[in-house]
Length: 207
Image 1: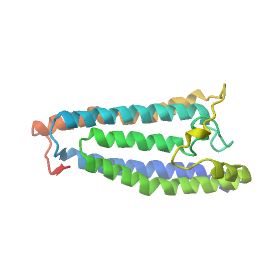
Image 2 (image 1 turned 90 degrees about the horizontal axis):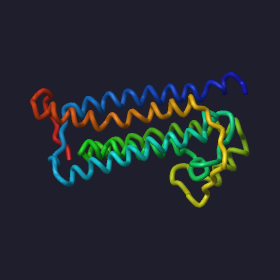
Image 3 (image 1 turned 45 degrees about the horizontal axis):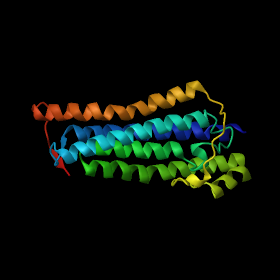
Image 4 (image 1 turned 60 degrees about the vertical axis):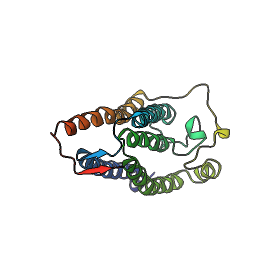
């Protein structure tokens, strides 16, 4: 593989991380001065814990995916486990976890913003990644795109091997990245306490 082609994926990853961090900073700034219109009630508690369940599903789903991809995304076309039913399972599980974070905020408007941002940004990221993989693997990857959906899993295609080659370093990194989603719950609780005690101002009351 030529040098220009080998540098494509690292550049895409760096750009994705940069844009994600900028968006995260903006959202944190908004959340610091916002509180839910829905007060603490049975409905909000239910939304809070449902969101936490989705965060667990998304985080552990990403870790499970990493056992199959093993840092080999640019080396082979992986078609086992989660990658047998959907082409981008890591992003799918990130979407689920992000929905959970939005629910934990108690503000459905925040959840809509998070998911809308994901839906506007990540399809472009995936399109660039798939263009790279098509260029590298040719017909093998094109055939994969014909048979396996991009976003909506088709569980009839499930194929789980008895053994899989795992790179512990990659799994550990994925788990550490996914752990960020678990910070949402204590952060929302802390922000709520700071609002109640007048330490942080409330400029926005959102549904």
